[in-house]
Image (cartoon, rainbow, N blue to C red; front, top):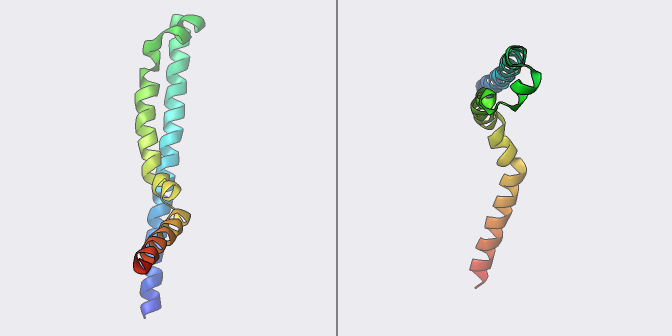
Length: 104
């Protein structure tokens, strides 16, 4: 009974993780599609060189890019920055400090 419960919890956690990753990739695809379309429209209307050099045309890419990076950090950041290896290093570091305090 308990193993079914643990499997259920781990399945739900894995399912949520997959949904989060899928959501990020959908967000990335929409970001690329919309910004490519904006780039094509701007360069067609203003001319290629003029469209590239007009800094105001990059505001959508910039601000939406900040949001996209925040989304990336929420999906991949915690494991990327504070992953298992980091946890193990910190545990060893704290244990070494405690060991030194005991011997003093």
